[in-house]
Amino acid sequence: MDIRNILVSLDPLASPAPTLGLAISLAEKLGSKVSASAAARPWFEPIGAEMGPAAVTLYDEQRKQIDAALANLESSFLGSVPPDMRGRFHALIDEPTQHLIDRAMAADLILVGSTSIGTDRPQIRVDAGRVILAAGRPVLIAAEGSTAMDSSPVLVAWKDTREARRAVADALPLLQLAKQVLVVSVNEDDYAAERESLSDLLTWLQWHGISARSDVLPLKGSVVETPEDAKLSIGADMVVAGGYGHARLQEWLFGGATYDLLRLPKLHRLLSN
Image 1 (cartoon, rainbow, N blue to C red):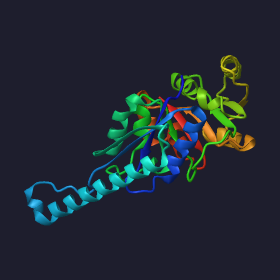
Image 2 (tube, rainbow, N blue to C red):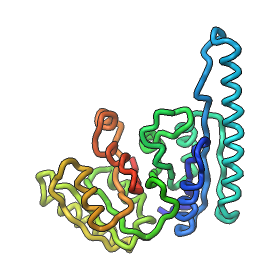
Image 3 (cartoon, one colour):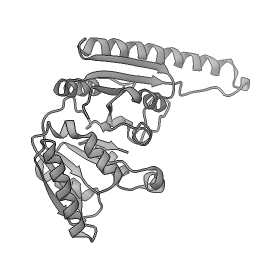
Image 4 (cartoon, rainbow, N blue to C red):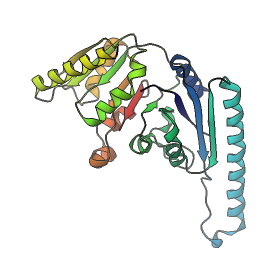
């Protein structure tokens, strides 16, 4: 699948420069459009008339602050994204995660910043975990402080599941840009099946013009620590993996591979569900 529109999530109360710069850099390489989603709602909300006029005044002030921030973001978007690359700018006083999910229909790739991980301010910041599970689109979580996408090596953390298959298919345009692709699987006591699965995947990637190599690694610490060591060995700056949830909601909420991958701030992470 070609990536024709990158939807970048912008935090109304933070500088848009890093994430927007990354989106533009990636769009230049892919020949795609850049659209943006920005939303927030007052973080103080009066409940009932008993809160009094002071509370209502504070609520109104926060709405005005958000309105001004969204206007500034739109100016930054228009000033930064070249006209021939420019998609749509979506802004609203709304719950930011749901607003981004609702806009995802017209996107091929969603780009969010690292501040979206483990947010405790859902009124103003997107929850990347919810977006991965609900948007129906691949989500690229930017490495902390990154403003450009180069052709650095990419690591694919492979386990033969629906989610991982979806992630690799979604990542094809990015894998085609990489100067090196390493696919690793963690040995979970069925080495022959894991090696056969990797062989099938490498053949499929080759059919799409991607020369990759693979390895089955012994489990070290956790299923995330093991590929983390592998990415260090090749200097990868992006990892591609399945994003698990729904049927495995218990694992999602209380730990597990997807949750751990979200918390690797020095890596770009592309996850699909």
